[in-house]
Amino acid sequence: MANEKIPYKIYLSEDELPKQWYNVRADMKKKPAPLLNPGTGKPVTPEELGRVFCDELVKQELDDTSAYIDIPEEIQSFYKMYRPAPLVRAYCLEKALGTPAKIYYKFEGNNTSGSHKLNSAIAQAYYAKKQGLKGVTTETGAGQWGTALSMACSYFDLDCRVYMVKVSYEQKPFRREVMRTYGASVTPSPSTTTEVGRKILAEFPDTNGSLGCAISEAVEAATSTEGYRYVLGSVLSQVLLHQTVIGLETKTAMDKYGIKPDIIIGCAGGGSNLGGLIAPFMGEKLRGEADYRFIAVEPASCPSLTRGVYAYDFCDTGKVCPLQKMYTLGSGFMPSPNHAGGLRYHGMSAILSELYDQGLMEAKSVEQTAVFDAAQKFARVEGILPAPESSHAIKAAIDEALKCKETGEEKTILFGLTGTGYFDMYAYAAFNDGKMSDYIPSDEEIAKSVAKLPKIG
Ligand SMILES: *Cc1c(COP(=O)(O)O)cnc(C)c1O
Image 1 (tube, rainbow, N blue to C red):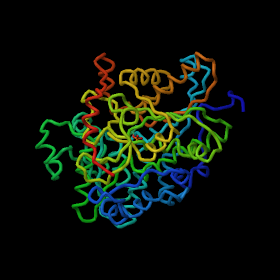
Image 2 (image 1 turned 180 degrees about the horizontal axis):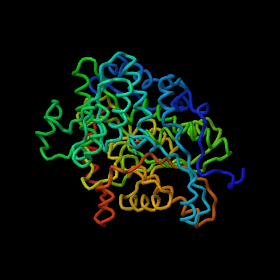
Image 3 (image 1 turned 90 degrees about the vertical axis):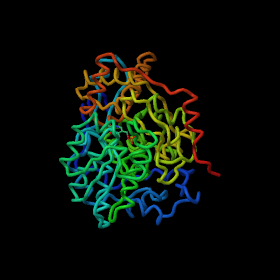
């Protein structure tokens, strides 16, 4: 079909929305390594995981053979409130760049949480409710996950306790109030309400907190409260599974118009949006049906794929979660305080880590001033004020489009625009005032953190 016929926005009808999630592990010949129990060093059992996570989610976490998993009707109905997410042809950006490349983005910011995180929050809350639980605990960094989970919990009438990284709690009071409006309780982390929080505070009294530390607190709160489980907004394979609605919708929409992306780009924090976006395309690549370039984009200040090591590590600073084999900077890695762009997690999804290790996916890191520069360019022509996280993908997409301008190639570029940046105005202010700086950790700093990895095998 000729380019002219492709609309600015490609929507799907309700009937075309996915009815199953796609589990890319089923098509991987070499699967991600199993989660290990840190005490025994052996693969975790469903019983052990069941103390922390909901039963149905444990099943999904450990299932690396079922290619498709039904999306329960109740979750499908909730999805219909804010999905399909539009797939947008970035005609205006293409024109501004003067590139022959065709750029598309899948916009996930069209709900109150302002990000893709609601796709998994609603699934996790549903399974918790179905199991008869009273409530769930979680951590949130920038606040999108906490907001998404608060929305999902209020929908299913579940109690929601959020541990929010202290620096975000202080810098983003409006995020906090959105969560409270949906009925969640929000505690700045590290806090004195948990043993691990008190321990971290004793050691680092001035800490701004970190995601890993907030995870530890949330896990402790869940495992020490009757009728509670812990839920996580990224990294885990179950979360990537739920996020495949992003990629499945995108694939259906592109197929309708006969569009085949050459390059698929996503920002990578814990890897859930990227994993969800690329899953159906990666499935084709794994089955030998088609080829694509996949690019994970991470911040230069927290470069787990590009400068980390592939090893077993803790998912949290408190060392209570199972060990996961992943690209990691070490669970004790503290991103620099000047880092504004989100994506500050020390590790990476086990699925994406394995795909990257097998050479099926590329990764690059970008510095934050360049990221905000790309965000501003994008906002000024496409209208949407992007989240700093999403802007890592924008930066990489613009770079690829400019390469096409040099070579004259008409490549098709697809990227995930994961959310909006309305709660990131301190970061935008720093950028607008010319006060934003870049921070790149030294090799010594990374080596020091990586040296503390748990010794396995
Ligand atoms: C949480 C978040 C991310 C990063 O998380 P992933 O699990 O890597 O997808 C990216 N963009 C936005 C807007 C987010 O809220």
